[in-house]
Length: 219
Image (tube, rainbow, N blue to C red; front, side, top):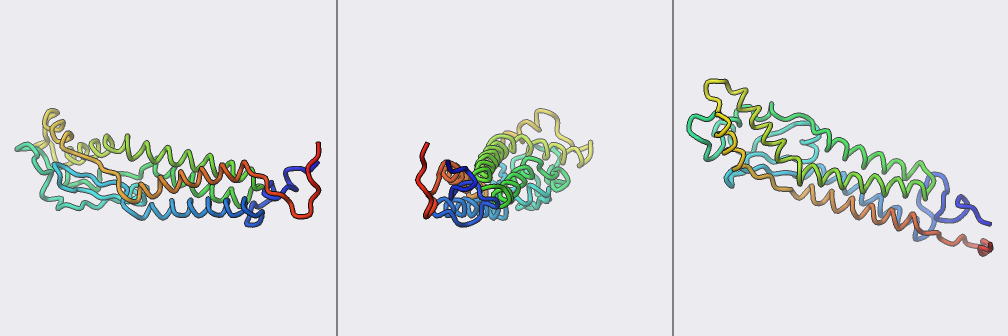
């Protein structure tokens, strides 16, 4: 009876090319993970206030905490209450490296490396799990968590502007309601590429290509 390690598309160590359609599927899945990484260089999030873009962050910016405002920081938030502090004045100091985005990157890279060093079917399983986990984490970060994080950062920046001009709780809530966070092209590219990679790895994991010249399977 043929063992997993001798079946083509099975568990040859290194899980590299070969193996016919299964090997091609693995390579396409790896390519999708590579595209997901390239998405980090494009905008992931655009923060706007009353329709005016304030900040545009790529996945790399979020991972490193390097935030550069799009709008003039001295202008403050559009429509801010009179006497409110200007949270844009110190906006760069209110952000730090985003652990969730860093975890997404580590899952992508770690899963990609695993597909080369582990036996093929095991590597495909790890690739599928890490791709799905990275997609779920990226979606949670950008679609759910980031708005509250941005509001907290603006509040922290406002407090650094000095107590004399700091807005009260009600004013801060009014400012927070005007803030919108929109997913960017880079985020969608990363998310869709990770979903595609997870599907391709799942298909590769479930396939067993025939070995040329091998005896047919018999119980």
